[in-house]
Amino acid sequence: MKKKIFIIIFSLLIFPLLALNAQNVEVVISGIRSEKGQIVIGVFKDNESFKIEKAFLSKKFVKKGVSKGEMTVKFDLEAGTWGLSLLDDENSNGKMEYSFIKIPKEGFGFSDYYHTGLKKPKFDAFKFDITDGQKQKISIRMKYM
Image 1: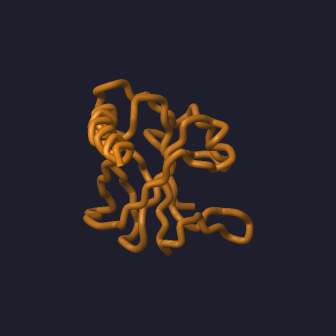
Image 2: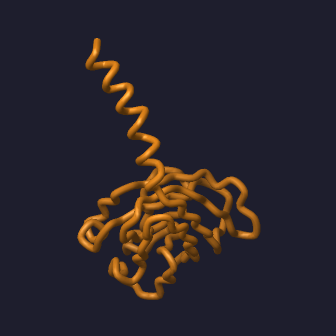
């Protein structure tokens, strides 16, 4: 019984401290072609995880409030180096759809980087840093093939 009380008290004290270290990230997404489906943001820490498409964190947002092809979403990240990849998941299945010749059928984008190539970019092209106490505003312009 004493152990349970200790755990509860400890949790109540430590969780607010953890929340103080979280940073507010605002992502402004432009060029959205429809209001169908959801936006999926993959949060990556390094090139290795991005290369194998294993996101540190995945955030899904229903496309509410899309106005003139633009919407804004917000979430918290700790201080560190991050990169965001975005999927305009129009059919809400949680994954990118490809044509038979491997061309993306749905929109995609990257943090503060507009991809113009045919191959996936390197993490260094779209990474950004957050320091303690910093609020970060990121722009992502959708690309459709």
